Length: 92
Image (cartoon, rainbow, N blue to C red):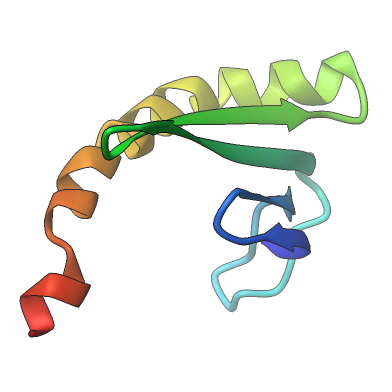
């Protein structure tokens, strides 16, 4: 990721792409702009919205064919468990 904007704790905007095994950007594969927004719903609840913007339809279709949707669903599906293991209260 290349972080473009941080609005802690409400969201961030990053450029998301692929990397070679050595960590350098792989410009042969599409990049997208990733917007994450977190809204406080009260009562200790939040709503997270993720929006990916691609330079064109072909780029979006390429990463979808590579499994981006399934990968994103799997990653987001882990958020509740990660947040339940609160390092701030666990460290105390």
